[in-house]
Amino acid sequence: MQSEDSLFKTYNLIRGVFGAHKTKPRGFVVRAYPTPAELIIGDLAQRARDANVKPVAARGFWIDKEGHDTPIGAPLTKDEKVVLFFHSGEFSGSTPTPSPSQEQLRHLTCVPRAILAQIPTARRALAVEYRLCELTPVYRDPFPAALLDALAAYAHLLSATGVSPQNVVLVGEAAGGHLALALARYLATHGDGLARTAGWHSPPPPASPQAPLSPEPRWAHAMVLLSPWCDLGTSHDTPGAGALAQTYGFLEDLDPRPGAYVAVRRAYGDPLAFAAVDTDAYLSPASLYGEASFAGFPRTFVAVGRGDRLVSACRTLGEKMGRDLGPRVVLHESSHGREPRDRTPASPRSESVDTGTLEMIRAWLAQNS
Image (cartoon, rainbow, N blue to C red; front, top):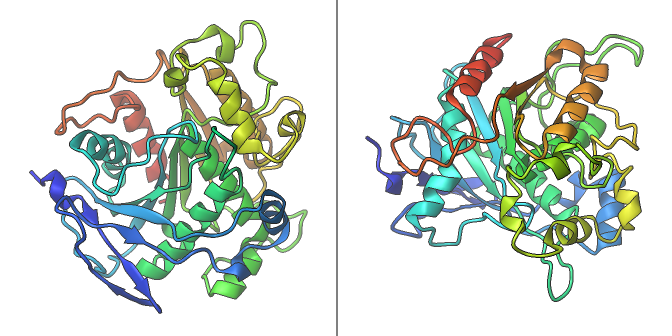
């Protein structure tokens, strides 16, 4: 069995040349350039200025598929898919330290390796260490800081491996699912301009705005969202809804800290007024008060447990995405909340996805792959 010490690989980007630099006994660190200014355009550029957020060097971890040890800089195999993973953590936690513990390694690798196992043509994932917002003493690194990091990782992934956008699988859990949605929205809105600037390859857009959506994904092969936190506003905070009725989910660690759930939403949405978060397509794509469009998004699999406090918002997300993407969106509800965390390193199950859900993801990804 592959040791956990061999899970992480590093790329250092030096004027387009990638070299391996072992920095820690447990593995390697990925460091990418900040997002080039020419890739931060339109609404994202304005939001970054409003929030006084600037690009920084994004960090991440290369994670091998179970049983694989892909050399750094290894060329792509035919039709190889590459996973871009965004971890959970309520926008304020779960990022590993420069010297991660064994527990942090398991937490970081569990989900991407479970998804990698469902994709026969994939053998590596890039797990992004995006910026987390600070709650005290003052709000810091609000939206779109994490999105800038996600965009930097996406651009880095394309240049580091040579993978085409159509072979990238976006995966996010909880807050990471929110970030995957935001990245997909930015790419759907500005992808053509970004491709011209960065030299990305993409299939031609539909002949006209009225033409059916291209059946071939343009900026990602697919997107897998695991209990995505898709409404940072209050539209689902109603009696009987999962946000209030359920106590199980990715946000349970916030419960002992009075007001932290609201504080995270305020901090991440700063400097927008809290009420504006309810209708913002980036921050609350599943809001009942907004009309977010999902045209141009990749085909998407949304998984959530019926006992998860995010279940109501995820149902709304599935409905809204279905209006624009039709059968290219699947909402799967398991009969429970998340799988209990399995701390056995060799376990084939992720800490947040049950075996049945993984099998459904595998079958779904196999369609049109």
